[in-house]
Image 1 (cartoon, each protein chain N blue to C red):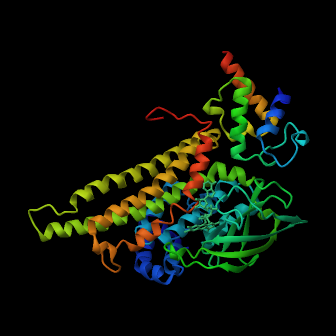
Image 2 (image 1 turned 120 degrees about the horizontal axis):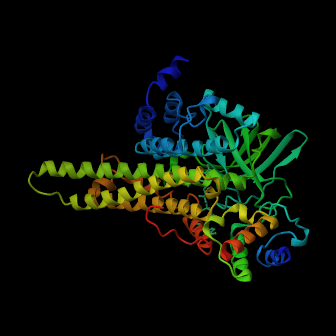
Image 3 (image 1 turned 180 degrees about the vertical axis):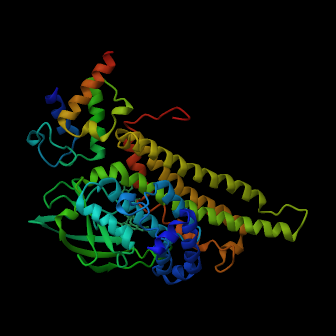
Length: 393
Length: 82
Ligand SMILES: Cc1cc2nc3c(=O)[nH]c(=O)nc-3n(C[C@H](O)[C@H](O)[C@H](O)COP(=O)(O)OP(=O)(O)OC[C@H]3O[C@@H](n4cnc5c(N)ncnc54)[C@H](O)[C@@H]3O)c2cc1C
C-alpha cells in the first residue's frame, strides 16, 4: 500500500502530468504504428488514475467530472489517443458510479476497478445502427441466473486490451429497439472475433476495431436501471464534457506550438512584430471560447445534478449537445489557424511545430457520434424547448 | 382526458404496439416511444388542449406513461388558469 500512499500524496494534476509525460514520449510512435499506447496506460495505472472516480467508501478517491476533464486535457496535450482512452474509460465508469451504487455486484466491480486499476471499454455502436446509441438490434437473453449476448460491435476502442466491456443491448430479444440495458462483461466472460480493423486518419492509438462479441455472465451484471435513464441522466452529459476536455487539450497544444513558433521569430528579428503574431492573438480568443464552453458545460452539469428533474430536461440536453458541437468544430478551427501561423513547419512531420497528428486526431471529433445526428436531435428538441434568454441563468 | 391522450399517442407515437394494449401506467419509453415521437406528441397535445408546455415540465418523466401525461396536463391547465 506504500505505492498508493505515495501516489495519493501528490495532487491529481501532478499525477496526470506524470502520465502525460510518458504519453508524450511515445505519441508519435503510437500514431505512426497505429498501436495501443501501452506505456501511457501503464503510467496511468501507476499513477492510480483509473480508479479516481470510484467513491472513497469503495476504495476510490471520489474525483469529480471536472477533475477528470482536467486530467483528460492534460494528457491530451501530449497524446490525444491516450487521453481519449482515459476519457472513455471514465465515461463508462461514471455509469457505474451514478447508477450502480447500492447494488452488491456493481459495488464489488467498482472496488476492483480501484484496487486493480481495471480498464473499461464501451460498446454502443452496432452494425445496422451506427452511432444511434439509443437503439439496439441485439437483445440480451436471460436464462436462470445467466445472461447471454451476441453483438455485431463494429467499433470497440481498445476492445482487445480492456479488462471489461460495458455493452448496450435490448432488454430482452423481443423488447422494443429503444428498451435497452447496459451490462458489464469481464474479460474471460466474452470472446471477440475481429471483423473490422482500425487503420485510420487519426486517433490511431485508440485501436477501435470491430468485433463479433459473444458473452455469458451472471445476470446481476446487467445494470438495474434502464439504459435510457443512464444515457439521459449521466452518460450523454459526461461523454460530451470529457470528450470536449480531450479536444480542448489538442487545441491547447496546437496553440502552444504556434506560440513557440511566433516567439522564436520575434527573437530572431528583435524590434519587429512577426507575421504570425496577429493570427496568434486571434487564435487565443478562439481557444478561450472552447475553454469557456467546456467550463459552462461542467457548471451546468453540476447544477443539474443537484436537481434531478432538470438532468433529463430538454433544455439541459440542448445545452450538452451544443457543447459537443462547439468544441468538436472549434478544435479544427483552432488547429487550422495555427497551421497558418507556423506554415510549412506545421505541415511537416517531425518538426517541433508539426500539427499533422493534431489535425488528424481532431477530425475524429465531428464523427464521434456524427454532428449531423446531434444536430437533428437538437432540431427536434427545439420544436418544444424555448431558449433561456437570460445571460447568467 | 385519457381517451384524447390515447388518440394523440396513436397518431404521433409511432409505437410498435397498439395503444389500446398499453396500460395507463405502463412505461412508454419501454414500449418504444422515441424522442422524436415524444416531441411530436407534445406538439399534438399543445394543439389539442390549447396550452404551452413550460420548460420545467419538458423532461422524460412528463411523457413516461399515459398517467404521467395526464398528470402533467392537469398541472399545466391549473398553472394556466391561475
Ligand atoms: C476515435 C473513435 C473511437 C470510438 N470508440 C467507440 C467505442 O469505444 N465504442 C463504440 O461503441 N463506438 C465507438 N466509436 C463510434 C462512434 O461512437 C460512432 O458510433 C461512430 O463514429 C459513428 O459512425 P458512423 O459515422 O458510421 O455512423 P452513423 O452514426 O450511422 O452516421 C453515418 C452518417 O450518416 C449521417 N446520419 C446518420 N443518421 C443521421 C441523422 N439522424 N441525422 C443526420 N445525419 C445522420 C451522418 O452524416 C453520418 O456521417 C468511436 C469512434 C471514433 C471516431
